[in-house]
Length: 284
Image (cartoon, rainbow, N blue to C red; front, side, top):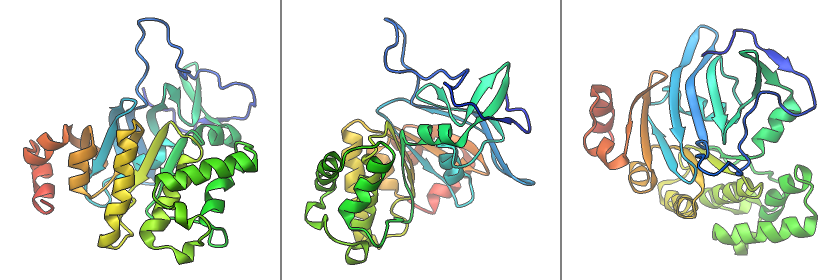
């Protein structure tokens, strides 16, 4: 069932009606919902159809990698997951909760921006470019959101930020400003900043594409550690070796649709679709 054109914004400030968020207290025998569930998601920019009915799911604790040529809709889909982009049809759920909308009587009503922001803070996102505050140190960049959004006391925020910077191998750079850090170090600060909000899902939009080749490995190493620790991740990437090693599912997109998906090794070594074969032949 697709979204009705011109959905209405839900201006209420009470609980979101019609949502089905699972709080981790499912009754005995019930299976928890996928962390991400996309059902025929469409996104248009005017007459340009960028997503044309994308359906996929990501189980909690798993890693899904999206690959495909530029313009295939990968990054747009990623931005739809946390409602940075509105969908024009279909449904997107995170942890069982409808993203960006409430549903009543079969119609979708766009959430008030404050409600959408509350949803979004459960989803960490790391972009191609680091977007760090240049006038703040690495530590200050990491503590900003937890203090402002989650109202964490500075002492607690600093303690958590210090632990996260150590986790990404930057304990010694806590007092450094972005201009004093390499691109790889800045991206690792950006990952620590996203983790500081204690998200249940992490989205990575080509996190190594802006890095010099010799710096790619240090960022991918942090991501591998996150995956090993059980973080649910959706990653747009061109790093085929990373996808082969870390992903549980590999999805090839082209022209706004999922062309082929499956276990990474099987898809990379024996793609079934002609378009997938042509794409991979230029990379592998």
